[in-house]
Length: 221
Image 1: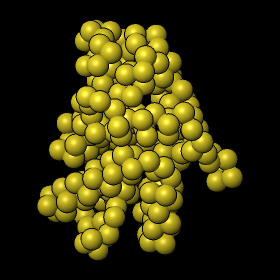
Image 2: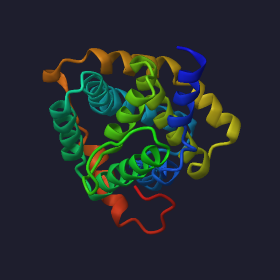
Image 3: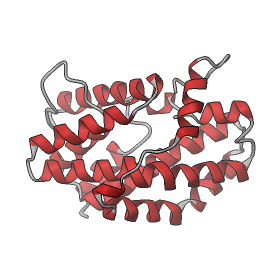
């Protein structure tokens, strides 16, 4: 990957991108509130299980399919996989998160003159908007997928640092320890057949629904 593509990838996979990623915990705040995540060991277990059961088997594979659909100029494929991702958000918070971030990223890449994702008013999930930006900037797909997974992990570690709480060094140690798990999740996402795709995570769904009525919240999901 040349320097320009790497810089584009670093920019659009960064949690600092102004689309609101830092304001979501994706159920983690509820897990911290109930005590399931309370130290570095339990935080590591949470992240690895989330990676293996959700990111590697659903979010990652759907992003991979969206990247290939954009590359092939397959508008029907983009629409179908985008709708599939939206339908898989089984709580109000998780759906609102991807729609809000997808909307923000869609506006950002349009205002930057990078690409237009779709007709105004359409609900666009974050993976669709991200895949559109990756395609427009000619970023290699494998690196784009791994960067998305790392961005998710980094945001989750930041939640742990703020809310468990963990120290900054402990947070960086946790993030560094996830390297083999992130690589494994990326490989699974690239190779998983359609018939094996799975978003079965009832515990996460319950935590997300509990978070909707949780007293005292720092995060929107």
